Image (cartoon, rainbow, N blue to C red):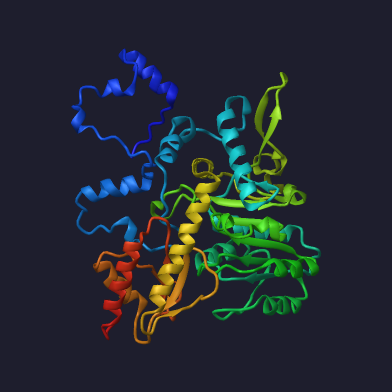
Length: 457
């Protein structure tokens, strides 16, 4: 769908060009009995509703699945993207822009990145946000390397992980940190655990240099981690959080809970699925750590005439200046993806982001309750979760086989976790966004009832 912005001045200029004095005159050739006047209390429809209406008028291609019936997440989510994001981000001034080393020729790109940093910093409640990294996995890996660089002593090599990390992010983390001799210590958790258990476990780590809380984690679980952060700080370590930026709209953001470094995946903010990328890695920190922060930073300044301008700042941290002594070997960023995230946040606004987050939260909880009520189905993470949850199917049922049968009925029902762990055959990870309707969720429950009712499931 194209986006064509128009304001009152544009309308008046168009009417003047046509020699008309009102919009009614523009439609005077249409017989009055055929004109439809909107009701006084009609607030119109949303762009998503309008798209859904027109999609319903066309025939669905054979083999394709309706957007509302897609429940796959696991790090890449099926969110609605306003038409304005594609329209503005596809401007050639942005798509063909090179690294903005010359500020006099790059003010548009630099301002966009500066505004992105500002928006994201307010959302996460962090002092500094860079612009940017490849994806959430590389952003987290850079965060760990950053924390390791400022560890309290050479013997401090323990890094605590609380919460389930995406298995593919674990692989990225191991690759990035393979030469640093970091000892990754994972909190061994059952389906549920208490903050007191985590704090007691942390007390047993003698050479901790940092601790990471993943919230929401790979299963979508939201962790109450403020006391965990206090314990990590008490032991002299840095407190890291890997989060979902949309969840920060509903839950307390990391900055307000004492996080020193925050990483996140920005794909939910206006970035299409695109077969897995490119996405957006978000990395933020407290001001005191800024000189150890990898990646680009855009700053605001004034020129010799006192006019507002934008530049790359603290560039002596970066590879193109310090070479092998740089904070990181990162030598590019996802500027276009950061721009898309900025456009999405600006278009949605505070109330729009709240509404999207609420829809994800409440609809995910609705579907989880419905599925957990089916015979033999168990909710793996019954505590607080955001947008995503995990169910355990009845004994004898394979999640991989169940999802294959549901695909045949027109559903992308989730991710069978045997994809990441061959021994985990019964667990199914399901994501719900604002795109999934109540009708599509009820239809999925009905289809699951039928499929699970067959003994060979």
